[in-house]
Length: 73
Image 1: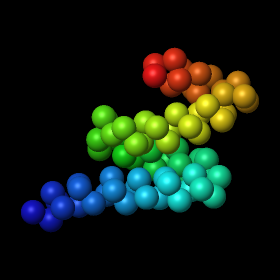
Image 2: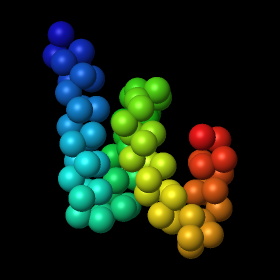
Image 3: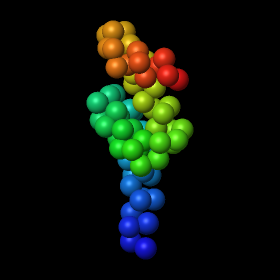
């Protein structure tokens, strides 16, 4: 029961951290939070949305990983 609760709590906490980091324009922190969420819940729409926002911003820097992620979406 504790592990199930933790598995539900962690993605929610990471999503809140991603949102707060995005508001503060801490893009690497947003990506770290999104990566954590997507490892636990690969189909989490909000994590995909936040990650796409950050990578679109980095697209101007011609980041190859950003272009690959955006092409898949």
